[in-house]
Image (tube, rainbow, N blue to C red; front, side, top):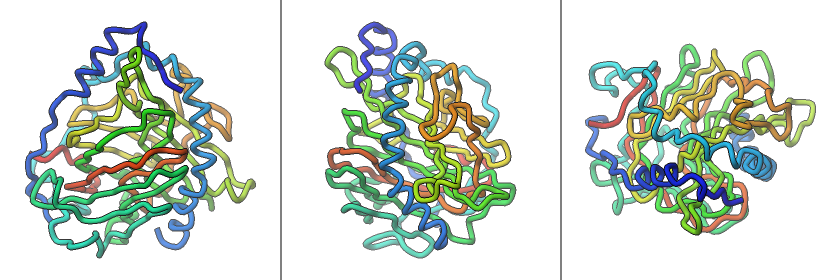
Length: 340
């Protein structure tokens, strides 16, 4: 489904400005699961047929809601509740990696999560700092994964189950059709339960102004992947669309996120500014026409005990080949901020 913004010229103009905004990409001074999780994350790929079909329905329902608010223009006016602490973030972070120490592919604490021809390699043609980054690439496919996975016990689980992440991310191009895609995923077992849950940030709905493609609208997604093979576990596949905020392409973007287990919450920042239209606290927003495919629309987004992060590109419907780059990844118990 293509969401037209022809009736909202002020939103279209703001979005075009957002697409053209330059991103700070200076160098950072920061250097540097398990069988069940792997099975469940494999389920993330395996469940994607359901997940992809899910938000597709969600996209059509949420289609007109996002055109009424330019979240990209209003986010900066909201008071910041997660300030960046003073000092160098990597002095206290659980993990900081600029990928300068690897040759062909990240290893050590990193593992690779790929399917259907997806690839994760070290690259020297694009980098936000230093001379190297991680290149994730996919072939045209109906469901494909090219993800870096962090599930090392030196990082996860995080004390208090409130975890912050940051990466510099460069996406060459976004889908021009309705394709559910993910760039960040946090997986684990829900406390007191036996089933897995996953928090995701990505997107799905293409936005247009007349015949001009503006970008792929971003989205928060909650899923319980065990349900696809075991219907005795809770279903979900819930979505929360942004209000006209599209994924930046063709430039380095500083992406930060917070996954808040105790409060069933998730939060995103782009280039240091809170993307408040993508904040979740407890469940989706009925006023935003949020919903769930395999559960009631107001079902809780019960957070797992986060045991792994996947970073890169994963899509769940037929899509063209995609290429993205990752640099300067950090994980911490406090917000990290963008490299200075």
